[in-house]
Length: 186
Picture 1 (tube, helix red, strand yellow):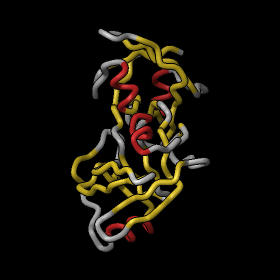
Picture 2: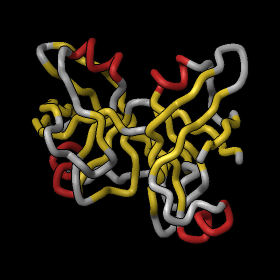
Picture 3: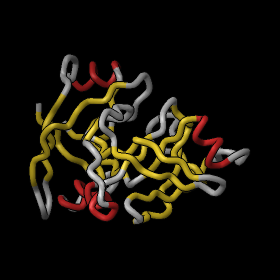
Picture 4: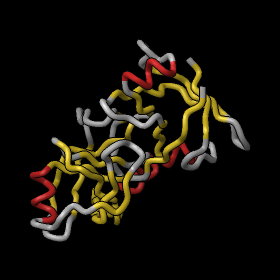
């Protein structure tokens, strides 16, 4: 069975409290909608800093969440000199400390992770695709740089668009881009 690829660039999810600290009364406006229902890339960006090294222009995604999370790639972590763990979204156990710099303030949070490879599903998609009771799959990539990606987790949400999310390091390693198709192996 095939699934579409979504390449996830570095980005930030902010709690309402942290958003207000960084952006005060600025409105979180939609730049473009994402394929995941009700999720969007905003018009706002932040910079991040660790060990005196900065990466500029991380997109703030919306809507705001109950937690603040910075998602980067392993390559980004080398530049910043930090060791963020690979985690599912919202699991900040052992997350690396990072400074988030907005237009009005900066905050330091233990919030930086490398997102695990995951496929967005809901109950309806699971039934339709024969994925009931499945938590983890492999994904086969064809093309000029073929390969196999293991430990791809299924991420459940009430509303979901059936898509695999890979960070830029994974996508670049296999020459994948948004909307390419890969094969799920159960």
